[in-house]
Length: 274
Image (cartoon, rainbow, N blue to C red; front, side, top):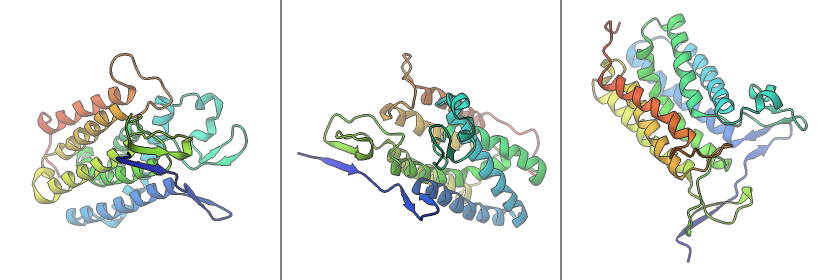
């Protein structure tokens, strides 16, 4: 008797003839549009200009996309550097024939690092406040965006979970499977909804936004704790699991959690917010 088994065999793209609209790419677009709307509300509350918001959008899109792609290549698929170098930066595959693929293979660890770097550059050139000031606010739309990115992964039948060894789970038909797996992507997406709600609440309903670094730290702790625990039911990505209990994704999550705790409870700004 099947408790809850879902056969998952979705259409991944819409063929427009001259262009294939991948639903995964569409999820990224939705993430950035909603992020832009939320950030616009935040900037209006803070009395900042539309010009500053437009610049933020450009810096964040370029930084997050580039960082996510490089993070995936460095941590999970380094062979692309020698085998198909230009596919790292372009939405095309060149090895084995030219093909439009969209930006597939994006790592959240790389996106997180790139977000910090891009916000540093944005703040230095445009905002002139403090890096933590902008990070405390930009993590709110980023948390919501993570929800749609994981939904996109589910549509693509990628970043899948382990076999459930029961009647519960999702059968990823496009991978040629017949046994149910944990829908790890949906586990993460569901948890990220609450990460967003918590951050949104602390910003709008409390004075924690005045404690420089707190919201940024809270974001790191919540998001990477979710990543850490979901990894227990997630299949390894292009690499073998480590013999030392944890996998690569979990080891990469621990430093972010520690940094988050530091900004929440230890960090003291040298200067007051402007």
